[in-house]
Image: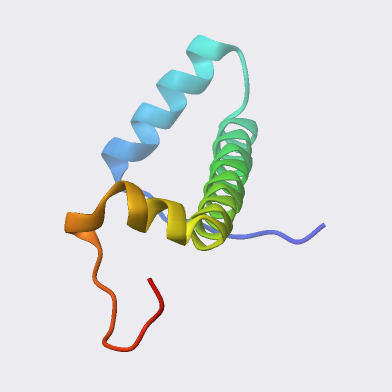
Length: 79
């Protein structure tokens, strides 16, 4: 498994120590857990955005019909 050295301020390290102690875990486990959770959130947001983009493109005409004042069609573009 690869490793990564991460620098923290003294205050951040003290906060990490305190949180790890409160949770009964190690600082290493705490940082890894937070990082893995953030990666999962990031992937979920990317996937959600892609689903929305596909939905919007697939339903562009319905959106244009429902919100004609917000529609910005280019000249010559089909209605």
